[in-house]
Length: 70
View 1 (cartoon, rainbow, N blue to C red):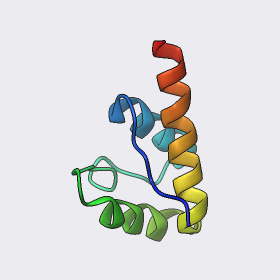
View 2 (tube, rainbow, N blue to C red):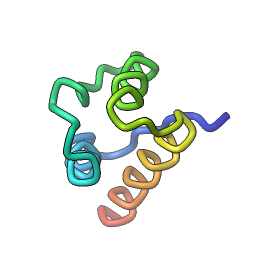
View 3 (tube, rainbow, N blue to C red):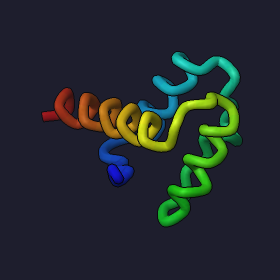
């Protein structure tokens, strides 16, 4: 299974997720280091996407942001 790797600014990633999934709230996207499973559970309940799809999407958004910063 893929591992969630949040790099760079979580607020940017959070904004992209909110654009893609209008039903997500700030509470749904509240990220606490070490509580990645809880974050994924909240997002999964609202979106219906699989954990693997969500991990891939979050990692993709995170990597794009990191690439821009270089």
